[in-house]
Length: 234
Image (spheres, one colour):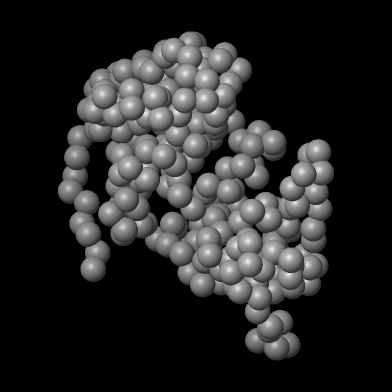
């Protein structure tokens, strides 16, 4: 049964950003739309639980967190880990990112659990209520269409190693999303029980939000079956 989201005015917004200028600019944008932003500052190192506790102590309606928190020393972890933790605890939160190429695989690992990721340049304060609704609906198990998972066929078109040779990356095609567009996904998105069976040309089954409008918004969940190749003409 669908759970209706009641309209809500977003008032208190907590902002986490290690860059002072970027944080103040974002807070000014929120004030222009009659929101009441507050900041989290300090040094948290590896203490993500302490950061989450400080956020919860502010009791915000919504949280906006930057992805890279390390350059100015706010934290040694990433913003995506913070947002994931908040959503798991049923707090609406979104991630801002510059979508640097080195971040894309890490973001893919958590994309199924992080409802809203927006490029820093694409963020619009007037859309905060929309971002909030996407988060809230997912927390209430009624995701918007572009976030709904569908059991989908996935074809492995290539395999490579990421920087440092530590992790394998698959070039995956989801025919029901785009039959000609390969999407890089980390091997960690594949269930451990079938990883040793994955080869170029292997077909897998997993849950994919094939209504996603962009590659960056695709997620891969429960990729836990090896599938026979589809018959020609089907």
